[in-house]
Image (cartoon, rainbow, N blue to C red):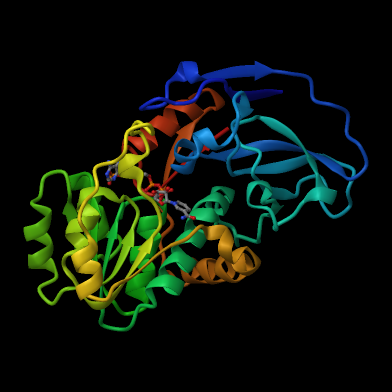
Length: 334
Ligand code: NDP
């Protein structure tokens, strides 16, 4: 079998040479184990952000969808599809007795019935990113009909779902994304009320024009200066769900990031700002998955994907995603 091993911590943009492609013999299956052939691999920002949380060398973990090829567990027969966190490998042996949803790094479960949709949706719109959008937005922003919602990273895996859920909930939705094509797509295909290219627009003015009555909810995927500008335009008792800060993931961790003075907005506007990790609601993931599948089937939610093909291309898909090449969820077909 083959797997990607991270042998060196990333500095700045991850490099191919930070990884080693390792070939190894899979061990024979023991009782309660299944052999899983990888079909789809997810490339996600947290693989960059949390790079230094694990001692090197480590197997590149991450979500993937695979199909059971050999089974010593009747609950996971040959042909069953499974979502694991085994990451960038072509085959893996999964100990089903250890299959749990209780440990953030070992999230493993049977792929739910996707009613004919591509299994890749299981690591996208109805997988971890979709679930992040569902709980991170609904639980922390508590949106009400008619409120104005802003989402950054709007054309990405999480952001594109947040914006669509906000529309389902009757909100006015403004999205920020990094290209004119993404902006057009958000407005024309996903029904955002307004999308803005943060790379070319004057963010302050564009947001004032798009949200003359202020912002009630902000779903923050990117952090940094743009988030300060958005929070400066929030209404009293606005809610901010801090999901990620991808604008700083490639920054030098030894450098203290430049602080932006947010405190006056937070105090005078009485904002509620809360960060979260999606595993907080692990016991409720099935609820989110069921709802997301239903919305997709009803035509209210469009699951968008950016597909790269080939095991050898996982690294390229990863850095491509960090650079904004993806519209929708970045996945790799193995
Ligand atoms: P995306 O599909 O959104 O892909 C990443 C996107 O980030 C790129 O497409 C790019 O789009 C944008 N980006 C890259 N650099 C910058 C920058 N400097 N400033 C602004 N935008 C940038 O990824 P996900 O949807 O998977 O993740 C989005 C965020 O959610 C990340 O911060 C991630 O860490 C976080 N997250 C948090 C979770 C949690 O539990 N808290 C769970 C899952 C994700 P563009 O062209 O618009 O620049």
